[in-house]
Amino acid sequence: MTVVKKYTTFGEHLRTLREINGLTLREVATSLSLDTSLLAKIERNERQPTRQLIKQLADFFKVDEKELVDEFLSDQIVYKILNEEMDLNILKVAESKIKYLKTHNG
Amino acid sequence: MTVVKKYTTFGEHLRTLREINGLTLREVATSLSLDTSLLAKIERNERQPTRQLIKQLADFFKVDEKELVDEFLSDQIVYKILNEEMDLNILKVAESKIKYLKTHNG
DNA sequence: GTCATTTGGTCAATTTGTGTCCAAAAGTAG
DNA sequence: CTACTTTTGGACACAAATTGACCAAATGAC
Image 1 (cartoon, rainbow over the protein chains, first blue to last red):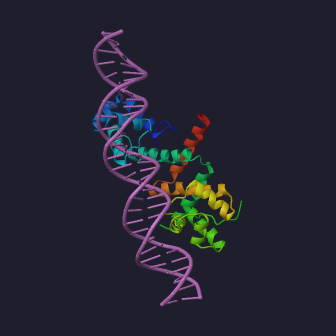
Image 2 (image 1 turned 60 degrees about the vertical axis):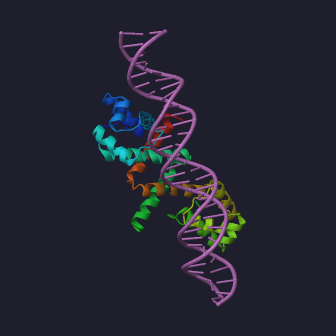
Image 3 (image 1 turned 135 degrees about the horizontal axis):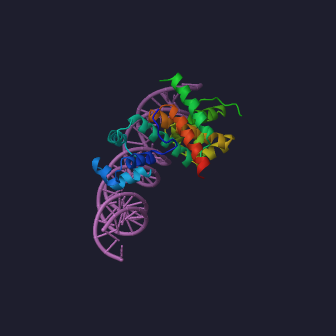
């Protein structure tokens, strides 16, 4: 377990990484050949990074790729639940279904 | 708690409801003024029902709307997790984030 | 065989999301 | 205040995904 502030979004984490390294949006964006404005939006969770970009970001900031991917993925679930105003218990139901599917199919 | 086969998808549940009532796709589809083929796809989880349609279906089969909606929503989560090949533990992380967000913001 | 039911492919139309561009806002220092 | 940099945010064209309708093929019942 690395020591990372918990309960943060992918974008916030990205911003923290950038600030820790004392870099500007433009600097990071240029290094990865992407639009400064796009990177800003990703940090604000207004655009979704591609898997490829997450990998590049992990390499750039020298952090574990899987950790970053997992943070991104858990955000996806969070947004889905908040957007559709689901009960939290739906997660339990989903979990049961998945366990069931995993043991009974592939 | 009503007695419903657990670990079923929304579509399978819908099919079961229809069969219990001894109805054909065409009969149900016509009653709700929708394409037979579309209803078939919904039963096979190849098309997503709208919230409005879920309500109509609940009314038609005289089942609890929320129960049907919840089943639909949990499927959504399940598909997302299976499609993106997420670890199951991502659900735990997501749950923590949501609880945190709910107590610290809205 | 006939007839009804179910499945599955195609397609146009809509909806949703992406990345780029540019300008406005906010921040920093002289 | 000015000059400069960084960050934000709107607008847009483009791409990708989803939808519902239509129709034909497959399956099932008899």
